[in-house]
Length: 104
Image (cartoon, rainbow, N blue to C red; front, side, top):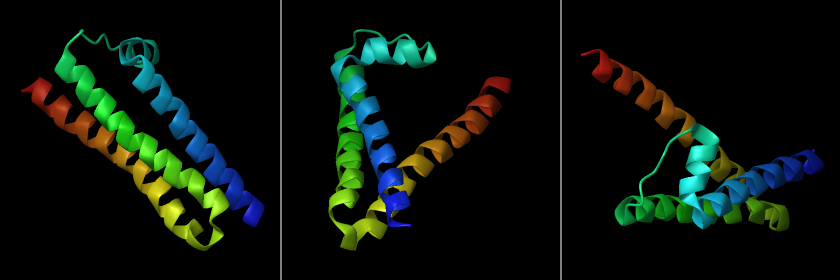
């Protein structure tokens, strides 16, 4: 069971780090490539994207720390679950509220 936990934390943390590094290094290209969203060269928008990406970077580092610190592994699982569920819930709320707004 310990190996399973380590693998899950490793994959979750590495996935977060990969996405974050791509967004921090070139958010305009990354957003267009992944979702077709074309970002403008707006300093404030890019600053906001990189700020959120830096928070995700911290989350990825915390999740990967669960590999090294077994006594806090449950805490790191909770952090990973909150990050990924937060994105899913946020997108679901956005889909429903934006769909209602567009219809009206």
